[in-house]
Amino acid sequence: MCGIVGYIGDRPATEVCVAGLRRLEYRGYDSAGIAVAENGGLEIVKVVGKLDGLAEALAENPLSGTMGIGHTRWATHGKPSEVNSHPHTSMDGRIAVVHNGIIENYADLRDSLQEEGYEFASETDTEVIAHLVDKYYKGDLAAAFRRAVKDLEGAFALGIVCADDPDQMVAARRFSPLVVGIGDGENFIASDMGAVREWTDRVYVIDDDEMAVLTRHDIVLTDLDGNPIEHEPYQIPWPADAAEKGGHKHFMHKEIHEQPSAMRECLLGRLTDADSPIKLDGLNMTEDEIRGLRKIVFTACGTAYHAGLVGRFLMEKLARVPAECDLAAELRARDPVVLEDTLAIVVSQSGETADTLVALRELKDKGAKVVSVVNTVDSSIARESDGVVYIQAGPEIGVASTKAYTLQLLTLTMMATHFAAVRGTANEEDLRDLRASMLGVPEQTQELIDREDDIREVASKYYEAPDAFYLARGVNVPSALEGALKLKEISYIHAEGYSAGEMKHGPIALIEPNLFTVAIAVEGEVYEKMIGNIQEVKARSGPVVAVAMDGDAEITRQADDVLWIPECPELISPITAAIPLQLLAYHISDMLGREIDQPRNLAKTVTVE
Ligand code: AGP
Image (cartoon, rainbow, N blue to C red; front, side, top):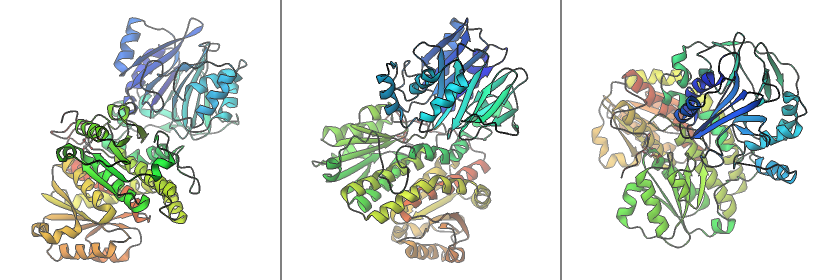
């Protein structure tokens, strides 16, 4: 996930673009760059690392041009480096592009352009756009783009400029967000309205397969074939200083709400329809290796560990490979025995967690093949793995992991389904159902977010409780652990995630009226037993909040409150059940006035053992 901006008016474009990129830095901070129309050409400045580096470079070599585009990068293809930074240009440097999204067919396009003599400077997917537009450019930038876009597959929000015409900017969108800021004698483009709010509170929100041609005094909106379209200007309701959070009170809240779009990016190019096989670029395993697997060992920390526990369950259930999941901090202590044909799956949002990196090295030294499921491109864990499947969540700023968790689960579910298909250990109809359900997860997640007011209502009943239990069975035991972790790490309420079947072996002694219990009781193999566990808690006067599937009449007779989730296969439910538990923890913490994005004693990435 990256951030793009653009400006055309009478102010220095660098001033507007850098300020706009600061509001977008939450979208990525691997590198930053800018292209400004200057002295008949385009001046390009790019730096690796945070935006401050770009601001310093521009302070040393100021540019006065009043039309330009800018970019802050979250690497998806090609490591963070100056050459991979945006803007990317045509070979003659006269056309420049900034891009947020993923061009799925970039490799094929690159090959055919190279055969036509185009030379590539970077490893990115984006650079193909610059060369394609150049290929079709005959003096009209918008016309050249309209032809080039017919060759593009995948997601994009684009800003494009040409040195030949410094009084025009082209912008376009497919799947990745884009707004056009409406000024007076000046106009703007950006990945979200927070980046332009300082200068205008009126924007056009661009829809998929639409584009805009901007001059200082005009904005022409069309579809990608050039047919005019209409949009009413949207009045931004919040002040400029709320910008980088896009109007959300906390990054955590923003990231919970980003999950549907992030999930679509995670699925893009990997799972296209229920009947097609899953493609996991970067897995780096042959089908023979997958069929020859004798053991899978997951290892991770915290939330990523909970994702690993779900992955372990799915790999055994679907791919029928013996699997285990170990806390990274404990793995080395037990000096594990690693058999031949063992796959280690290492899960990490940051890719820099010290305990997890040490565990990776331990397993690798003992002969395991290592595949990591990581968010941060080119991170230490990614670099030391034999294969990497990136979750494409974009930067996660809130210390409490939310979108990274559900995208780890989605990625691991795709992986387990793929392994089962290759190993022939599950029937095709079941696998097709799982693929169809995964494709429906973004929409179900949006539906769950739309129920936020109901969840806030439940939070208002329990936010003063001193303790909580989170109970589940089977594939959702990790969901209980994760729900409890979300609550305790941001609200400071003591919460324990537990196997519901274990309660009668001691913990049930703790049940009392002011301790609430969250019970995950979704339709599936363990539902009846969960109803029994809920009754055991209720019999001891413990209030129960159930997570249940829409239409379950029985649960309303058993629980005090219900967090409803849309119907889905039980094996998919850890993903959807996570959403109401994230929102419950968030609203309880918000009602307690906690520092939700930076909870006490915690850091986003734990780079010490
Ligand atoms: C989760 O909300 C916490 N922030 C923490 O448990 C985190 O998941 C853990 O430190 C692992 O981090 P990683 O995914 O970056 O390796």
